[in-house]
Amino acid sequence: MNIRAPFRASVPLQSNIPTRNNTVVGADNFAIESHSISYSINTEKGKLVPILKDCSLKIPSGQFWMLLGPNGCGKSTLLKILAGLLSPTDGRVHVRKPRSYVFQNPDHQVVMPTVEADVAFGLGRFNLTNDEKKLRIAKALTAVGMYDYLQRPVQTLSGGQKQRVAIAGALVEECKVLLLDELTTFLDESDQVGVIKAVKNTLSSSEDVSALWVTHRLEELEYADGAVYMEDGRVVMHGEASTIMDSIEARKASYTNTINS
Ligand SMILES: Nc1ncnc2c1ncn2[C@@H]1O[C@H](COP(=O)(O)OP(=O)(O)OP(=O)(O)O)[C@@H](O)[C@H]1O
Image 1 (cartoon, rainbow, N blue to C red):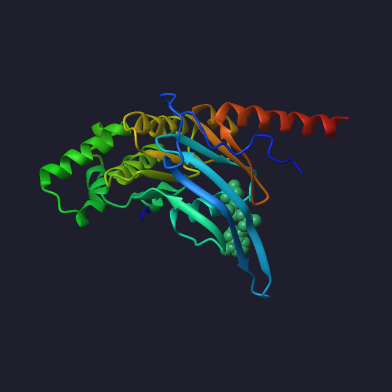
Image 2: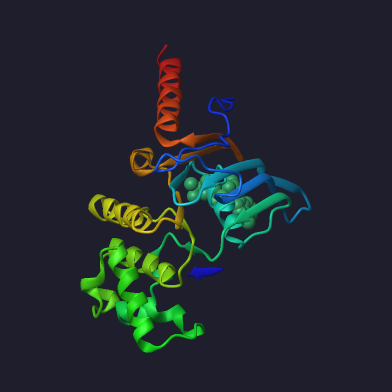
């Protein structure tokens, strides 16, 4: 694994999900699957506290999905289990490999002096010629729209540009699944859109890279193919992005009507 560092499901878990080219995904064509995952922690007083409860999801290969839900509902914990950084207490996980986890704060993973050196950082363990390395770096930086910044010192980049370099660092190792943890938290609006578009572009230019993007910003859903919505440690909705968006909007409207009546 690469490290760079009381509303029940109105949308059923879908097993046949259309892909971008409208073929139907078969059972073997999921990039990410979890079956009834639970995760609990032991407190200092010896009490077992459940964080994730019976979480199941399926994300088709080649798609861009988002994982949404209120603060503290368990999004990051679930993402870390999918990344292999935490082991579930119960349940099964399958994620295509190589997979790569990108952190919320770009300063925790963009560590080398220049963009080129940073993206090249993980290539040392591969048996590649210099030309092969340069080709891979160029391809990864082009996918995230950062090739023109090849020689730039990383400390001169904006937060969004650093995030794109971090994503290129994952792509250069030919990862198949990108697990992206609230990348836009520290970014202004234009950087936020730039990073989302970089991920979308990466997936469009490669049929077999998939991404799961954790966010609490509902507006980011318009860029996704599908979404998983969590509350209180459970997956409560899972499916096509616009359907999930409508369901969350309806839920917000009914909540507002209740408190205004
Ligand atoms: N090591 C831990 N010890 C105690 N509680 C924990 C631990 N890790 C996570 N939790 C708790 O588990 C819950 C889920 O945390 P998690 O970070 O996964 O939520 P999240 O949905 O990603 O939140 P946010 O949107 O605020 O980032 C929270 O209540 C959190 O306090």
